[in-house]
Amino acid sequence: MKTAAESLQAHPLSDVTATSKWHSLREIGDQSLVFISQIVLNASFFLLMLLASMWLDPSEFLKLSFANSSIPLIAAALDLGMSQSCLALSFEHKKHDYIALNLAIKGVIIAVAFAALILSLLVSGPSLEIILALAAASMSFWTATRAVEQYARRFRRYSLLNIALAATRIIFGFAAIIYGGWVALIVAIYVLAQLPIQIVTLSQSTYLRFGSINWRALHAVMRMAPITFLARILYLALPLLTLWLLNSDGNTLSAAAFSVVLMFLVPLDLLFATLKVYIFPKIVESEFKNIDLFGFGQRSMYLIMAGLSVMLAIGIVPASLVIDYLYEARFPDAGTFFMTYFSCYAVSCVIGLYTVRSQRPGFVRLSLLANILRAAATAVLMFIPALNPHQIVLWSGIIIVSGELILTALLMRAAQTDH
Image 1 (cartoon, rainbow, N blue to C red):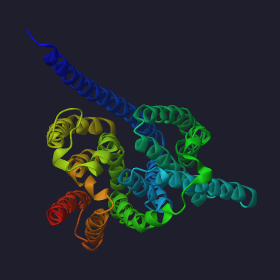
Image 2 (cartoon, rainbow, N blue to C red):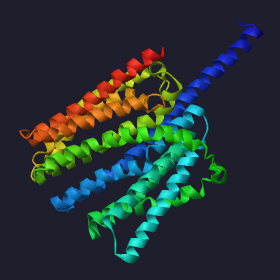
Image 3 (cartoon, rainbow, N blue to C red):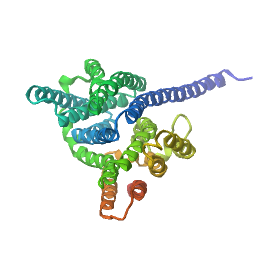
Image 4 (cartoon, rainbow, N blue to C red):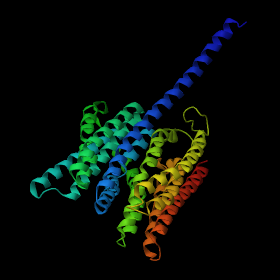
């Protein structure tokens, strides 16, 4: 029979265990909600692109693909690496000054873009360049909005924003496909769908105290942001470079087939982007091998990486069959391109769960170096005239994986130097 002292000692331990289990279950629930909302958000984009690929002429769909690849690049240029830098600095210093500053600047940028569009409509009619810039500004503001929720770890509100955007995308995007062209679809997805969410976000962000933003934080941000920007834009340019190489010889069908592959990569990006939302704060706070995800214990990152590898290896064949079924008549190379590029891209994404450490303030230069090497190697392919479209896609995929392996080696070496 337990003594009174033993009973008193037992209860706190039991309470701690119960609290730990509840915390783990809550984390799993929150991340499951984030993941589901990301699926809904990306599925809305994927559905619209799928409809567009079947509704639009190949040349129009290719223009849409170029626009979809270009808009993130323009958004990265407008962002200048600030969103990721501000998020990293906020986690590092445990202060929201940086993300508040980022949201305020992005609000100014989108206001200027809207003013430029209105001016162009009044003076000379709609300008495609300004429309793309506005779409990119809207995307940049969306990134800044989600960074606020990520820093506060309000994952349920983060999920709600995703679902709201998915709904407005479907409404405006479907109407644009039926009654407009590819330009109307760009406006619908990137501008009209996000506008109501942006207005609500700004109206509810008074807790960030825009009137008392610490502008001195801008100095620390600008030391890190340009490096983050260059690393990011080089990475985003990799599939666009491949698309340009395929289209450079006037081979519209091969380029359009690769555009289909890029469309089917969206679910993969969704999966890993969701994980990184949750992983990044933990990467800043502890060593990779000590990260505990969802209560699985230390080294759980390695377990998750192995599980994802198996899941992706199993899923590639059914996905390839779906692409063959849908596109074999219109784009015969789509299935082969998918098997080749998806395999390489999936491997790089799994390794990328480790290399996300490169987004920390002290390691971002290593990410820049790896992406410079990747972009340069991809650009070299244009000087090898004997390459056919299949070889271009294969080497582009190999280069993506090689860059991730180089970055892993650089991070490991940096970690040994620190110790």
